[in-house]
Length: 405
Ligand code: GLV
Ligand code: MN
Ligand code: MN
Image (cartoon, protein in one colour):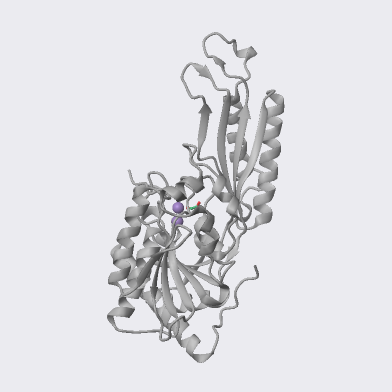
């Protein structure tokens, strides 16, 4: 099973390997105080602002090989090409491997990119993983000082732009016979944790009519999520709305015990925060009605909220031109998956390149890309870097318009 969770020995080993590759490509690599690995390839002048290229190195449980990691290795490939030809640019290029984009260990994700963007809430240190280990404890065990998370923040002037390459994780490019796509915007998302609490009891001796069983309540609530977000709900089909229950836990969790509590996650996404929020309001109302009808208590906790994140129009146009130069149509498409780019947009303008993946399959060990598509992605990224460099040389400051915070 492939799993690389945040701040684990697997994460540590991956950072060592990446640091080695970064050094081979002519970069100076360092681990920052936020759990990220950053390699820097200097520009023509020292301390020049940097183009950041990267993605995340953590994975979901039983995930694939490319989700996140490909964006980091493609960044290293681009710098390798620059250093092989001895080229220096008017800006530095930094490749970053963010530590936690998936949230597969702790309930909220992207603390690492938030730290870099300067938007992290130090209270994240209190969240705990499934074993009750706090983020602060995990940081300390990894050799990081949990009180220094915010020191990973970059000042806006020192980062020119952020470019993220990522597998599409969907079927659109493959269906259209295209290797690459240019992302227009990343969907808004919310993560909720719901807990129904009843009364634990003996599975053999408690008559059905005398139970306070949160299990069937959870089943009803999960169907409500499907109904509200599905094509027949009031919001059905609006703004690409999707809702998922991906984790369910019955406590204490035994064949012969009526659960005392059932906890489950809900992930809701849409292209607009308004549609996402309308779905969350409807789901919360249903969950509360189910609890009241079944005489259970319920809590609904918001674990994470991310607004939709448009990519920078000027950078996107540069990326489109670079993709077109690889000989294919520059297909624009939105991203339903979350990415570090949506957090980095608070720091600097962002652009995202998608790479076709086989069958659109992701978050699955069957994730696959072709070497030819990856080579094409690297060419498009290098073309983008060249165009940014040309633009930078023409004006004393870069053209990208950025996004209001
Ligand atoms: C990350 O893969 C996400 O979209 O949640
Ligand atoms: Mn990813
Ligand atoms: Mn993912």
